[in-house]
Image 1: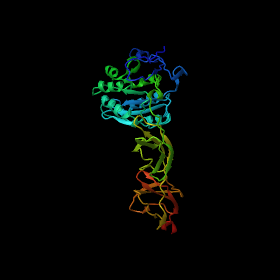
Image 2: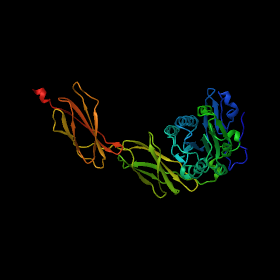
Image 3: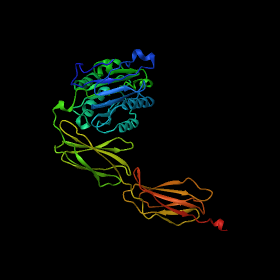
Image 4: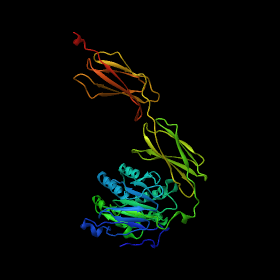
Length: 441
């Protein structure tokens, strides 16, 4: 049941072969409308059945894969979560690496939004974590506008697309577009992009066929409900570079940058420096993001530059950094590193003054550029020990009166300097209130 796709005519360029590996559908009532029963195999990817419903693939060829995900109001939060899980299942078998399969994702409704580009993540775990953190957009469905966005933004060297590598687009939608998809889809296919269209629920079959590449029986898929996306988990779209390789392009070798150095580290910034390759890049694209969460950000610098300061970072946070050279004809491999920003220092000279049986004054020295101070105090002795209280103090003040305390009780007092959402290291002291006058009597 293997079908060789290498001879299919009508391609903008030779993209090789595509494999759609399917397991039997456990929902027979959907079989007539669900084109999931084929079993095609590709070259350059060796796939085998692990346990009837699971496959493992060993990919040996590179590919640039863009997921275009419908985030319109008709999806809803619950179904969007099911879509996210489907994407996780779909991506998990991919061999994600900068020199293998690169994955980007755009979410669309009214205005398309690039969630991350092809060069944002270099490992499968990073991509899967980004999918888990994908937020529902909402809006109306303008699929043609989104297809134009993919063509004009996502599949360019600046975004990490490789001119000597096959490109694939996987569309996931649940309805009919409010604009004309045919010209936009045709432009992508004419450029050699292999397009898969996956429709759910109210998706328009005629429109899916307009969008998808030939042969339609391999590139158009439909399920009646988001709950049945699981049936697509093992048509996992294993992609291949087929007959394409770097020697086919006749391109010039471009040395990548080397010697990544991370220096001048502060709580909010650090400097990224590198040694340029012998061939001058047009620009360098510096991509950075916290290891845990948040979308990638980037700085673009001229090809004559070999250093840039990344600022407005979070304190005490580990960042992944990648420097990509962008040439006229391709994007080079990324030079990668990891760095952690420093913590902000605590306020100095924390002092407790004017202690009474039910109050005390807390004082500290001002920290430059702080936006607020946070004072935590907790009773740690006596029968009425509590869980602690928190007070915010404007940056213009450097002391506060704590009142309503218990007499003859020990308190731990902690002060942080706040810098927007970030906090400094804490400074802590302990002080006991005096005995009550009534107790002395």
